[in-house]
Image (cartoon, rainbow, N blue to C red; front, side):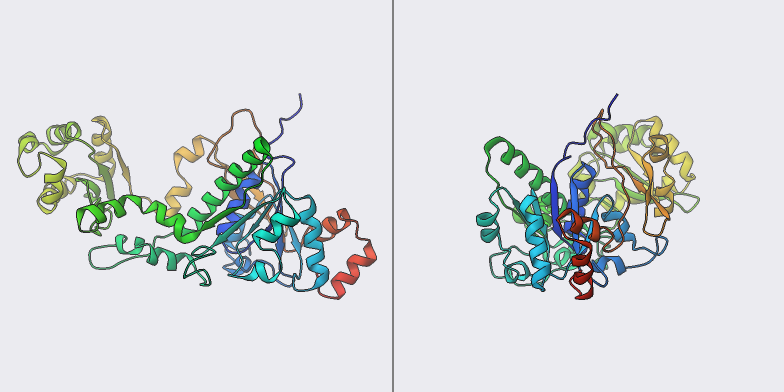
Length: 397
């Protein structure tokens, strides 16, 4: 029996990408079977390759974001390099880029030019603040966007703000670029029209700020910064157990509150206490409520608390560090880890893509070395061995 084709088999993506946002979008396209040709700078490639060296000498960011791709090195400022890129675009379906503001226009690869020369090509531009407007020319990085959207003002403790611990703006932009490209591919297939896709880090994360934006605009104040506590629900947060570990649990409605009072706190009279009888009341009297909950949690070890809460169907969890997450029983039992080959022959474990497509294989191909596929791609484009060697001598590849 033949192996089913992946959904994007036959689709070619050419990407001028760096850092996180665009590589995350294209890796997900590669996961679905697209051929992704990653164009990198000669002499080092994507600078994310050098963010760290923790994964057998490779960058933890790069290993996460770049499996299943082909790497081609090109100096796009050299006429020969740009000509090779044009030849790739002749047969490409998607062109993704997240270069610095104005860079693709200087290369003659702006969206209007692309649409005129390659009408079936779907261009996808990922920028910091959009390609128009007062901040179109600004460089942006993840933490800058976290600050500009107000996310940092919501994250941390009452005393101190904090960066979200992952590149959340980049990830948001990468997700919208990925879904935007899928939508554009579907639209091209059904209408014949290739629509350009544009995503900015700022607007992607702005969408994720929808709830606090509504709360602030119509409530007059923004949600409080409360560490692990939830600003609009209580009790909802982490509490310290007798063994010094933290347990987080959540009460979502009055039925759960009554069950918690009767069967965990041992204080059924608190169910109808005016300070705690409604969600809004519990939030308003958070300090008094937390004192009651903290006193109860301080009498039991973590595992006993979790067992008691699970017995009454209250959502709860221990507060893991990253090492505990890596060993999580759910990931192990569901077989979510796979080995991915790295440059040099080592392997690293990576999680399967989160969307399972029943009946289709999973693609987890190697992470490429910088320029690993350059000669093969150029030969495919009709370049002879002598021409390839001349390009290398001239520093074009």
